[in-house]
Length: 89
Image: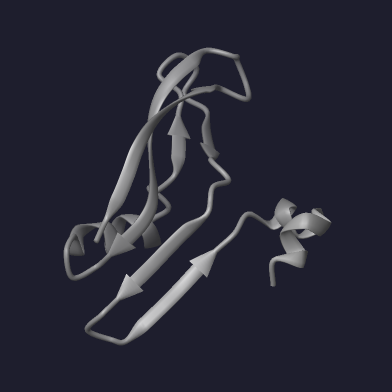
């Protein structure tokens, strides 16, 4: 299962509002092309249409490669400073 959604986000450089696709789940068996995009740094990234700034969008991402039996859950680094988040573990 691959899940994505579109969000409105402001460019951190110029403030221009952008509509950006973010990925919450990637299953490489369903969408093998997303594997390459992830490792090329093209997933959950804002490429500003006005100023050209490229910025990572810090959202959780579940990566699942069923063929290799590999499963990873990514959380943004800033979340570690949140005690409520840590208490869930």
